[in-house]
Length: 60
Image (tube, rainbow, N blue to C red; front, side, top):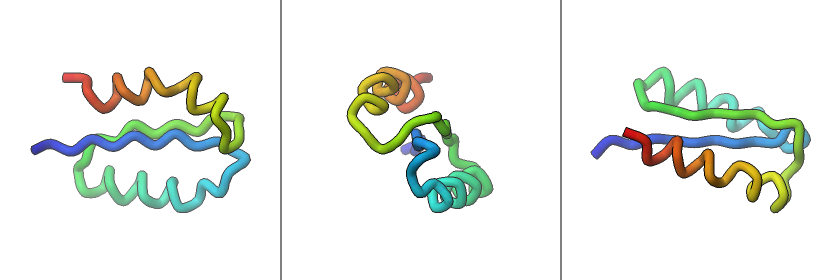
């Protein structure tokens, strides 16, 4: 089974841990889609980027 990871963080959140996990996973050879947005931790941000997350996780 091939694992894929998607991280989508707002810059107004504590994003240091996500940045470290992104580097670690990429270093181990996992495919990672990582984005930082000018946003916070809220439903509006999730709603606007949810379709992109699905594409990143299920693309061939």
